[in-house]
Length: 327
Image 1 (cartoon, rainbow, N blue to C red):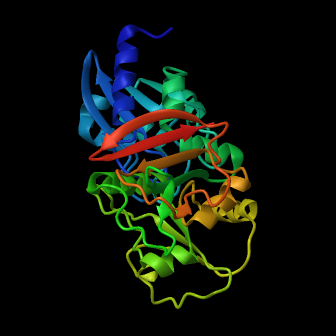
Image 2: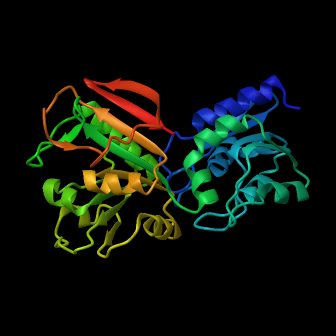
């Protein structure tokens, strides 16, 4: 059904997918091919900006007419802050559209049908498994109607995220901290408990190149002990201040309704424990620094939860090892 050339062009689209920070939207990749040559390509701009198909069509210009567009996710059929990508492709005059994975979103799905009804040749399923991994957060969230949750902690060799007095700076390397900022940007939101705000007064932004929209900051403060003058409440990004007791399932449901598709839970230990015990964590990322405390606060707040989790990735950032676990 698909040629070797089709696979090559879709692989290029997959390389582009995830190149930017478009949360809560998926970062889609698109490649436009005329004959055997790429005449346009792009990936999704930050939320509110152009989608991948629009970026690629602008680059292709008149060469898009009669071309084939390879897209990692079904072109959207939704008028939001930007117009439907399906109509953009039709207006550009593309002859054929190949997309990897269907869009399950009730608001945006159906772009393939609209294209077909306009006379465009539409084919789907090319490198679907790879594309599903690229768009895992978005697809998971839409299907389960809750955000994809990653727990992240910077810990010592002996498993502590802070000393008994709460001191924790700096366990991980500067390189590892930059990678953690990337993870914040990819998830699109970062969540902490009141204790973390009081102890560290963090900004919780993603201070790396390419980030336009900082992640939404979520602060759990059920006793309403924070003052609102802490740095996390500044104007750098939106902050959701939770000042009532809420269960983790209900919290995630509410965040999904607010449009949040991914959550990075950064702590502290009690907050991490609550998410793990609720069994609503899909990924654990541990930055293991090159030091030990001997005694301190365990990162998980209780019994070691890694039983049943698989280490799927390990990479060094300076003297810090990033370990990624999945079920």
